[in-house]
Image 1 (cartoon, rainbow, N blue to C red):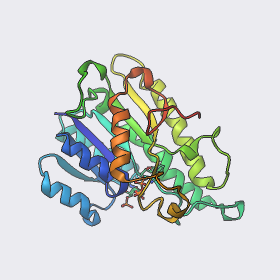
Image 2 (cartoon, protein in one colour):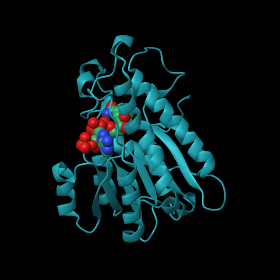
Image 3 (cartoon, helix red, strand yellow):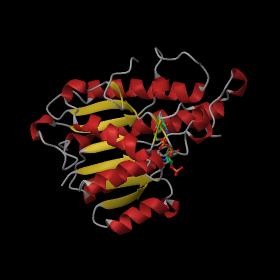
Length: 260
Ligand SMILES: NC(=O)c1ccc[n+]([C@@H]2O[C@H](COP(=O)([O-])OP(=O)(O)OC[C@H]3O[C@@H](n4cnc5c(N)ncnc54)[C@H](OP(=O)(O)O)[C@@H]3O)[C@@H](O)[C@H]2O)c1
């Protein structure tokens, strides 16, 4: 049975990944920091009790990450086929900085902790489980030879691209996603060695209709705001077609590479 772990599964894109993967027959370890208030996730578990395992995890807590890794080791045959680090914040206030005046150590630290440091510490504690996985996460695979390795996805954002930055602003968010991209590249090198390789990619989901982007929806051109279902369906097509030659890449929802 394929096993996927979604870190940041309570809402938005992470919740939609959990729904879609469960519908494919994948066992989903759905991590969130407050299971008691994650009502949509609880509903998914009620509908699919044998496929959904809700695990408490605040991605800024090393102890919680270690505990979750131990749980997956003992409860899911000691392997993971797909891990998606999905949690993210624009900033602790929910809005990106528009100018230097709004920059603070505290906001930078919190944003980096959730968006970049957490994903890296996840990789540290889950890499052995991924090395034991096979990357088979759904019934839609036609070419089973394509996936030799488990897959680690870090949910990035196009605004993390240094090359693509024409507007400025959003210091904490942009910098944390750039750091996440570097972590992904580094991981692709370390976890690309030896026999048990893991494919590591950073993905941009498009602009998606979630709580995170809500304050900025009015600026999004018509037709450019994806529903969660749309975005996850595009992202899973990208994930389904990954092979080891893609490791270390920074890819958009349409499969195109984004320059770092
Ligand atoms: N939406 C977009 O347009 C867009 C565009 C580019 C990239 N992205 C990226 O896509 C990812 C998902 O974003 P989204 O749009 O789905 O956002 P969202 O709806 O606001 O969901 C954010 C998720 O992150 C979780 N989270 C926040 N802090 C956490 C912590 N300390 N520990 C564990 N989980 C934590 C939230 O959990 P709680 O429910 O507990 O708060 C929630 O599940 C993010 O990495 C985001 O940067 C989104």
